[in-house]
Amino acid sequence: MAAKRPLPVIFYRTASGNEPVREWLKRLPSDERKLIGEDLQVLQYRWPLGMPLVDSLGDGLWEVRSRLPTRIARTLFFVHHEEIILLHGFIKKMQKTPTEERALALKRKHGYIQNS
Image (cartoon, rainbow, N blue to C red):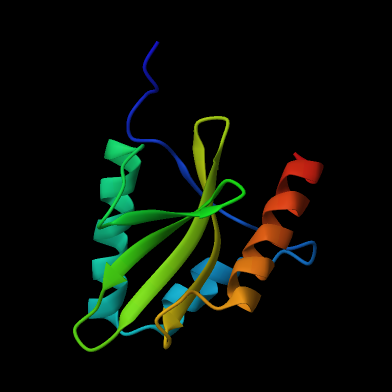
């Protein structure tokens, strides 16, 4: 049986109630927020999909690869029970996704699964 579309997008929430990805998005200029939102919408309707929009980081982590006017953004997520869980977002400054960015997303993923 096919999953219902669009898949819901859930913002990871910390124990203190913060939503890091939502807060990151709010700090971006509106035109960049809009582009990332459009990429997330494609993800919701077309998951699973691959390059060039989505790439696997291993361990069930994925990244949405958003091209902004003057830079590149990454939104890290995983899929859990037919929901897209947004774990971490950042502006990419290096060729490879930094280890600490991936580690933070993986830590949040494990915490989310443990508390769900």
